[in-house]
Every structure is written in structure tokens, then in C-alpha cells.
Image (cartoon, rainbow, N blue to C red; front, side, top):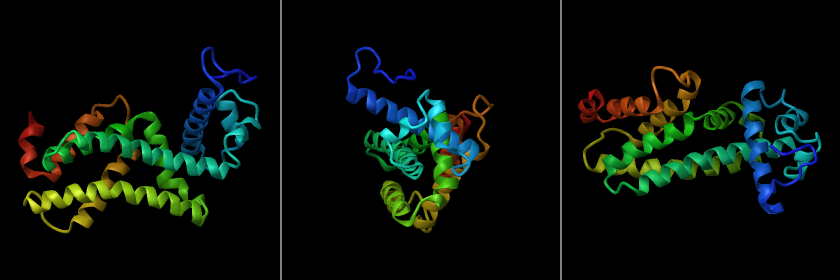
Length: 210
């Protein structure tokens, strides 16, 4: 964290420091929005969490509303990027589907991911319609990845039924895990991913039991 004077760390350019501070602010905002709620969180709270003067976050964001929008979009983007990277490494649809589930849950259930997911699920109602439309565009783009892979699995006879409903159920189940997952508990994100694969893909049951 920077000092109260916000001097760049040794060796960091002003641009690099500005980018780092923006990230610090968003991580703090995500955590506070999850813990206290968007309405109850003040700019002063966020500034204090990153050791800034109370007005300094406005150098990076015009309003608290802009912070909420950025937290939501950056949270979706982080999961999107992780899942894209996992999908690109697996050309075969079954393996790709498995890798995508693992990547989504790994990104979602780390501390930062849980904060951002909680904000998207619970706090985005405070966004104005234009901002919510931006979030929805990012969500739609992410869901296309899943639709394509699910359609391939259906075409191969691996999955049956309505793939639109399957996608909604699958993403809903994964995202809701932020409500009951306990870091350091008996089940890791890897364990959860393996069991979900076993539930969706019947021939994964033997793999899960190993």
C-alpha cells in the first residue's frame, strides 16, 4: 500500500503506480461492498482501506457508482479471462468443459473473486440502467463461451436437453457457491469442480471417485 502522500513505489513509473492504485481501490471496494453493502460503504471507508486521503480515490473514479461498475466489470473480466485461457488449451469439448468448470471455480472462490461475485449478484441493483447494460454486455459475452461448448457436447450426444437451461443452471450453481464455500474447509475449489463435473457428465463419476 502507498503512503499518505501516495508517492510511487521505488522503480514504479507514475502510470504504473496509477494502475496499481486503481487495482488497490477496486479490491478494497469489492471487499467492503460485500461486507457492508454498497449503500453503507463510504468513499472514506475505501480510502482508509488503501491508506489514501479521503478524496484521493476520485483521482481514479468520478463517483462511488463508477467504482461499483468497475468492480462488477473487472470481476466478470477476471473470470472470463481465466476460462478463456483454460478453454483454449483444450480442443476436445469434454476436456474443455471440465477445464472451464475448474477455471471458473478457481477464479470465483479465491478471496478477491468471492468479493467481486458477491457484488455482481447482490449490489448491481444500485447501478443505473446504462451501467447495468454494460455489465449485462460483459455477462452475455462470457456466457457465449459456455453456450458454444455446451452445444458441442449436445451435438456429440454427451449432454441432452435444453442447453440454454443447462447453461443457466450450471452458472447459477457455480456462482451461488460463494454463499456456502468456506476457505480452508474440507472441500477445495478443485474438489467442488470435480464433483460438479461428475454431476453433469455421467461418465465422470468414476473419475471423481478416484
